[in-house]
Image (cartoon, rainbow, N blue to C red; front, side, top):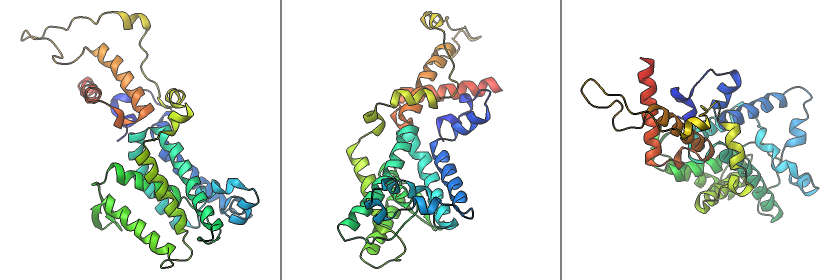
Length: 299
């Protein structure tokens, strides 16, 4: 569960705030689904203008390395890609942050398609026109398996296995397909391009938002309605803790409420910027204390 879903993070929410809390994964799915239904409008030029075609890429239509990831060949093609994206993407957002995950997903799709194109140029890959987000999905699956290798998943919704094994099976099937043992309509080279991208990304430790210098700019857009602490109040010393009937102090072992909420705002901003995986044990303790405090207020 993302930090934006926690109860104490919510204030009076607008419709856009509610959508924003869903994360960038839901937005990617929504955009892809909208494009899918638009491409089936009679006379729609989307597929002809956006599908991957190596001959047209060679002629300079470089956007065809990007646009295929928002087009799909059928409802089941769309369903399984978006299902995988939802379960994997929402978790990876917590690790890498929203902006980083969005940039990585989009670049993975371009890299996978370019990998296919280079294979065609080298005369080791077919030149079939293709559509689909499978290259980007393969990349995020590899990233997920590297981050959570022992996470249990269900193959065909029935057979339990660790995610690293499932991804290994998929890679093996793609390799078999490349050597002619699979369905000729599936772009196995695109899948393998995604695998290569995901592995390089995880092993290198690179962060694209850091390279582009956009981390600070993205945080303010992502975090909705953080509590603002006036500068004069921030400089004041916190009031002494109240005495409890037993002679102790209230909230023993933790910071006063005002101080806790101030630190909570900082932790929430860090989660939105860098992902939940960047938190220290002390910062996780602040989230826990804030959650407990909010529950007591509601009683």
